Image 1 (cartoon, one colour):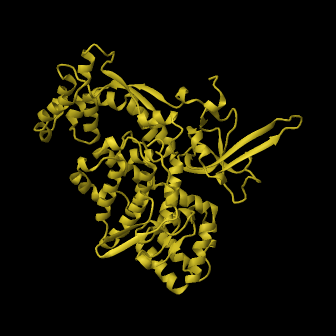
Image 2: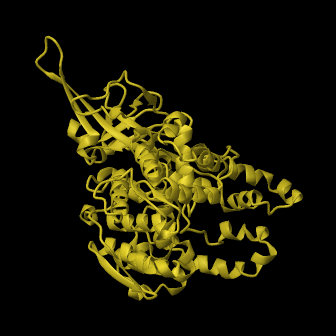
Image 3: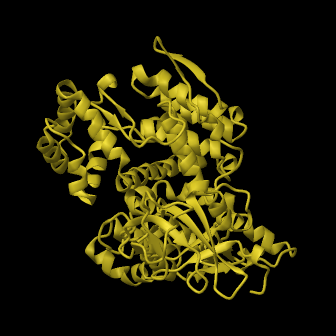
Amino acid sequence: MGLPKEQKTLLKIYKGASKLITHRSDISASNPPKLTDEGVVVGVNLTLDQNLLDGLPAERKITVNETTPGSTTPKVTYWWRLDGLFSDARGNPIDGWLCEQPGITTRHSPWEWEGFEIISEGACNADFLACHLDATDTLDESERTDYAARIDLADNGPVRSRLYDIIDGADGSIRDDKLTTKEIMSALAKPWLAQSIARLITHYESEWYADEGFSKWEALNCYMTKEGETDWPQEKERIKSLLWLPDLMSSGSSTLTESVWQFHPITAVTCFNSSCIPLVRAQEIALLVSSGYEGKAELDFEALAGNFDGQGMSFGVIQWNFGQGTLGPVLKEMRDADTSTFDACFGENMNLNTLISALNSGNQTTQFNWSTSVQSTNQAGWKQAFKNIGQVEKFKSIQLKNAAKYHENVLICINLMREIAPQHMTTIELRTYVALYDLCVQQNNLNKAKQDITEDYSPSDINNQNDLLIYVCKKRAERAASGWVSDCLSRRMGIIQGSTYTATANGLTSSRANPNFVKIIAGTVCEI
């Protein structure tokens, strides 16, 4: 499109075209990366907002000015160091320096709707229900034969086929043309897949419409199981009470039809909204805040703590530990990535073979016992070994990649909050994201308190997203082990109010300070 360059705020990266240059400790503004340097070819299409690129820290942006012989006009090349956004051709996450290259990358205006796909769906409710009953092995062989046409129509329809292409096998499993909750959540946690899903625009009959005979719902009568037959008549009446599109269509004041275009509103708005905070930046701030509870103003890849809390040892930017089984997989991934470098980090009298065997077998007890033993017999060597590990660039990238995995659990928390109070969760405030991220680092997710959260929820007490955030964080803290309730409350409430919060519970008081509270700025997170 013939728009001014400043209006083309989207940068598209193409599968098989650009290469991410692997970061090295010597790369800097005075020694920028080169296209001939070692790197990995990008295996996916992805569109990046200029706001995301501009929001990167200074050390992750390099501008190179080169003057071509015979010309007074300098050639400007932009480099950005991007982590957690791309994968290679096999779906493995890759990090590194990306270069904007005319002819290889392209610029677009939001009005071009780049990356959006329009799909019309023809299958009906009965088709989809038959397909669901088949996928859950509810049908017997005769029913499966009777409903084969409907199952095929739904299973091979355009929307489901496209979702299979994007999602099926996203969690590392083999594609089997089935969509599981695990696969869907795994895909949504990967930016290169989540963007494709969020940019699907489908044309389908609205759920807020039914004809006078209520035919699309009556068609489901024959599919009801014995358990469902009792509740089905009441459910149909409930559905009828929710329909509003027929009244609007018959009023004569609208040109609406029963089939409507359905799209992800937040994704659409984000394309035109340069004020939201890029997800990658939100994740970086959340990581800084969580690690800030260890007293660090910046990410500390060498952070190390002993068995003071009964977890054996804790290490890294997220303080993974052996007690909860979170440190072993991270260390194993490091060793698998570069065995010789990993092993060389350990000096003498470290009983390294025992650790290696425990990592390979996944034996959490042996990992724990190794850490407590080496701390008592060779503490200096233990400290030096993990200091060495924390200084290796390749291992730093692995720490960042594993830290980003908490985003998947944050999405689970957000989905629960949207279920109980959707009106307060249209967009996600950065402070909400950071608090939930810290909750997931310390407590995994909201699941242990899910029943309490849903059953005790009182709409009259919750007026906005901040109220809802306080409510769910307190409910989850109450479900922590008695000795940790005050700590959970202090951490989460400190993030929410932006200053140290003193909490007392079960006779214990916690007052967790954090130098990174100031990094939580006002704004919403893009594309959540």
